[in-house]
Length: 413
Figure 1 (tube, rainbow, N blue to C red):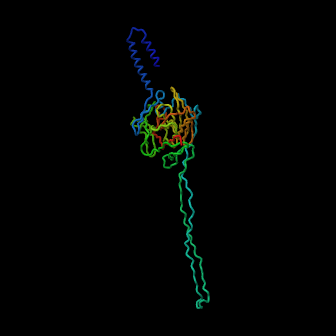
Figure 2: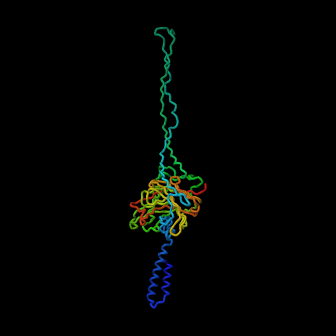
Figure 3: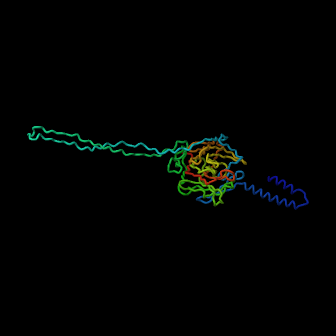
């Protein structure tokens, strides 16, 4: 468009005319128009968002610009021009649609009483001997004395055996991948999985969000997501209390009553390949919730979303986005039908050859084309977002995303 404008302007300026004033006026107007066009083009270049560090001040990251500005700095929207596959086999990966029920927590078991009854105690009196003399008046010795021995009375007291009840913690369901350790005291019923929960992997990080502040290395989002002027992130919408990390979406008076949500990243921990597990739930429909891996250098793509809703509570989607060109992107998606208001353990196992998505210890999607798998350091991000200006994921009441714990594993025993 700009090139055509320059061509027409050149013709106008080189054309012979006896009236210089119209030419000068046109030149001024055209110059103003070009300035506006240049500014609009600049507005489409990569923007920045601020994620104020809870502990260390301000953290700045680059978000996609141009046609991808709507994808957001820490997640995309559903671009109409995207190459998307949902619930079908797609080039470069396998997408699976599988309803999965939440595992049932087994109750405690009681062992049978241990030990036998103690030996009975015998408190019977000693036998008594009674000697009876001869007949009165008769000489002594005329009748031999008789000895009568009475059978002793036997009294047996049997004490009741002590009752011993042993309560053992039930084992977690046997699953191919970690779900956690059954723990009735944990908010979600499961504590983080053990250090050796994944064969061939070493636990590299774990937190169950105890205390009242974020663990070191985590940073909250602050600012407006790219491409969505109706959305807002704020540090104050992330809290840690009662063993839970909570992201809160509500209409915040501090922002003119608009919907504000929470988001955070583990920005100090960047890895290439590994396994990530997050135990989480949402309180209800409204904002999206996303658990994802994002490039540590903030150059998008790639992106791996291992649990993302569109604002509903009936299922989740996983996405591997590995390329973008113009207004389209290359990605493969998987979808699972599941109750998002219940607690679930969401996982992603990222290797050079596969991306495997798990929920509650079982696989529900996989990408198996090495050409579409990221090979750069990435960080774990957890976020909410509203999309009211786009016509979906717009809450009607305050809602929260709750996280009980995060566990991560690095390749190598």
